Image (cartoon, rainbow, N blue to C red; front, side):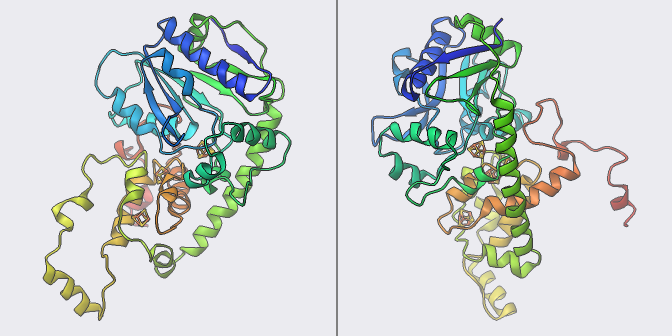
Length: 380
Ligand code: SF4
Ligand code: SF4
Ligand code: SF4
């Protein structure tokens, strides 16, 4: 069994080629019969998660590009919730693996037939920014990694990484069988693969990889990255808590919500099969609007905005992984993920729960311990 393996390269492009060859070896060695990975598609040169059955189609795979058009956890669940017996490699980032683990706990996906290949994550740009920076030219990606290596920062043409990424303390792919190590690596020389689970180590062996050295610069680079991100996260969340310390503040943040529900659709852990907000419960009689307007003198349209967010927040605050997709898709530029994370941090701390940490860890709201929250039961 192989624990560490090396993909050598002379520049980023050859490393990417080596990654594709590795995926091809997994298919060739029948470790998996299909791969889902971010792939550069011929139309518009966009990168989207793509399910690949034909090895020859792996040539567009590009998991290094700093973009996550949409969180892949839900696709992983769609591909695995039925017992198909198909062996599948999933190439995902940490904020995609963690919600997938939560969906598995909710019985919306399965882990038994999948090999999770988790990318170290140095962040992503918003989709629109990436499209205008990348322009279909992969050299942008390589420049991105070189800039981070040389401490030149990620800002390009005024575009910076998504705020959620600057606040992300999970750049390492927990829950992966194999990790693609990028932190502290120089893509102009190569990268290292780490077999984390037994399944991952066996897969590296079957793909014909040879044992290599554990990378030496990783720990120091990881420590520096985490320090930077945690410092950003703490002031970012503090700022949101201050802004929303009362109802008026919360309404100020949410006031221009147009009830499009994009944030619900994009969220990888918004788990209800049928959302109550799109059922008849919220198809109010016309007269109802007049009654509300009568009571308060006026009525903001659309209605139910605060109720929608508070309901979603109640569902999400134990499970939010801080992926930032809700903010990315908001047409009204509402900092949804900053708001949800600011609440989730407290809830998750209270339950000592970290979404995606361990598939065996029960969902906080799915279990009840006799001794928990006695102060609530006692009415204190
Ligand atoms: S939230 Fe974290 S894991 Fe997700 S893209 Fe950003 S940095 Fe990567
Ligand atoms: S609420 Fe937003 S940040 Fe949290 S998991 Fe959902 S989409 Fe990601
Ligand atoms: S995406 Fe933005 S505008 Fe749409 S429902 Fe969510 S917060 Fe409101």
